[in-house]
Image 1: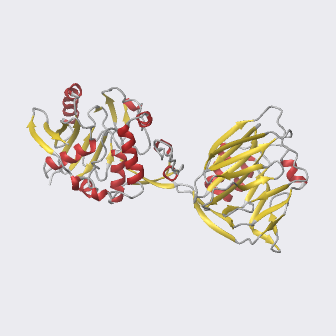
Image 2: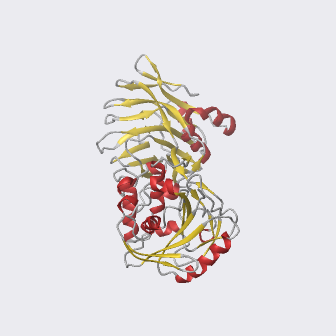
Image 3: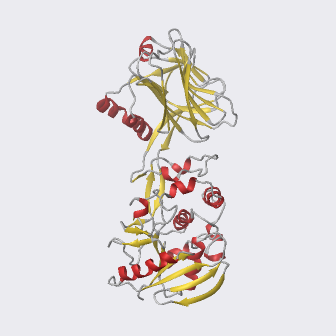
Length: 485
C-alpha cells in the first residue's frame, strides 16, 4: 500500500495566514513525490482553542487511507529540504529551526509546530489529550503518551534531573526549560551512615584544619532527609558561632558563616525530602557559597571579612535530632570553581585524582564512615589525619546515586521554517509564566495529573472524542472540516 499523508492544520480566525500557508505548502511539496492532502480543522465555536482535540477529530474524519499525519501550525512555512514530509519510521519533529523561535528549540522537549506521526503510533497513544483548552502542554502530553504506548523515541539523560525537582509554589512546578540534555548516564557510589537520634560526630579541630579556615576552602557531602519532623538539623558545622550547613522546616538548606566580629551571613535555598542532595559549601574569592545539587547560590562578603576564630572549637557532623543519612565528608583547602562542583556532583569520588592532577585540588580532610577504629573514632584519610570521636551506633552502607534522569525525545530533523508572526508568538516560555487561567489549568493537568500517573492516557483522547461535525467542504486547494468542539 502506498503511504498517504494527511496534513492536519488546527485553525480559527486566521484567514490571512491560511491564504499564505496553503499555496506555500503546495509549492514546497510539488516535486517531493508525496501523496498528500491538506485538511483545515476549523473550530467554529467560542470556546478556548483546543489544538489537540482538533487534531484528534481530523484523524477520525479523513479516512483510513491516510497512513500518517503531519500536525501543522498554520504560521510555519517550510523553506529547507530538511523539512522532509516523507513517511516517518518513528515520531518525528520537523519544526526545529523556526524563525519566530530564533531558530532554536524553545525548550529541549518541544514537540510542537510541525510533527509527523504514523497512524499506528498515534492511535496506540490514544491521540492527543482532549483536555488542553487554550495555550500549551498538548505537545508535552503527546510526547508522554507516545513514550508510554511504546513508540520509538530516542533516550537521553537530563543533567539537571528537572522532573525530580518539584516546586509547589511555581506556575510550572517543573521548569521544563531547565532540562539539560546529555547522551551519557551518570552515576556513582557513595558511602553513608543512617544517623538516628543521638548519633553524631563531634571532635576538636586540629591545627591543620584551622589553617584551612584562614583561607579559601570548601566542604562536600551528600545527605538524604527522610524524617517527617520539621526541626532544624545540623548537617556539618564548625561549632562555636556555628558556620556550616543546616536544614530547616523540612524544606530549606542554610549555608552560613560567622566573622570574627560575630556577624552572621547566610544563603538559603530549597531541598527535597527523600532524595539525595549534594552540598558544596565554603568561602571562595571572598564569597560565601553553597552549591545544592550543582545549583550555585552565593553572597558577597565584606572586604575586611575574617572568619570567626575556631581555635579550641569542634567539628560536628549531625546532632541529637537527626534521622537523616549523610555520606563521607570532605574538606578541601582551595578556591572553588563551577566545574569542580560539577565533577563532584556527577562523578563523586571517581574524580578525586582528576581534581588533584588537573586543578591542583587536594583533600585536606576526608571523614570516611567505612573507616572506624575501635567503635569510637572516625578516621580521616585526608592529608591532615584529623580523626574525630563519634557518639552512637554507626553502621556503614553504600548506595549508587543517579545524577542524571532518563528523558525521551522524538527523532528530529533540522527543518527550517519561516514564520507568519503574530502577537505573542516570539517566546513560548514567557507565555507560560504570564497569568492566564487556561495555561494554569493546563499546567495543573500535565504536572499534577499526567506526570504523576493519576490520569491514564488511555482514558482520554481518541477513545473519548465528543464533537459535532458541521460539514466538510472540498475547497480548491484543501479540504475544510468545520467542527463544534
